[in-house]
Length: 161
Image (cartoon, rainbow, N blue to C red; front, side, top):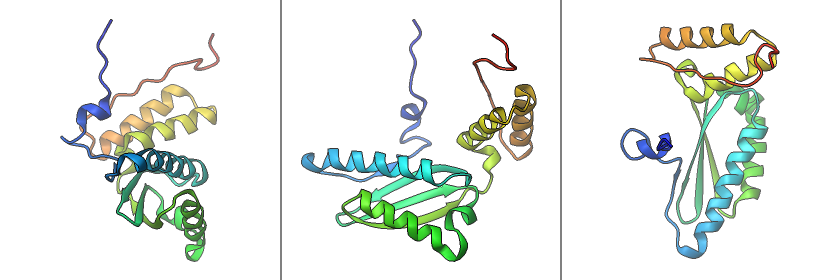
C-alpha cells in the first residue's frame, strides 16, 4: 500500500502558513477549535457565489480577526456594506470574543486551486462537457502564469455507467 502524505501538512511552515493562528490553554483549546470550524462552515455556506477561497482566523486574548479571501469582494461586502454587517453579527454570535472582519481580494482566481475546482464543479452541475470544462480551466490557469496544473475528476461523467 502506498504511503500517502497530506499535502497541507507537508507544506506547513515551508511555503504555506496555518489557517488558524492562535495559542490557547488546555481548557480553551477545544472551544476555540469548534468556534473556528463553525466560523469556516458559516462563511462557506452563506457567502455564496463570491469565490471564497480561504478563511484565516487569528486570535488574541479578547479579539478574533477573521480574514476572508475572495475573488469577488463586492459580492461579500454588498451594497453600502450591508452584507458585511450581517456576517459580522452572525460570526459574533458564534464566538465568545469580539469579531473583526477583513475581506481581501484574490488577484488571480484562475491560479487558486480551490477556486478552479469550484469553477469546474459548477460547470459540471450546469451540464457542461467535462472535457471542455477541464481544458478551459487548464488553459486559463496556464495563460495567467501558473507553472503547471493537474486536474482529476471522477464519477459518472457524460452519463456513462
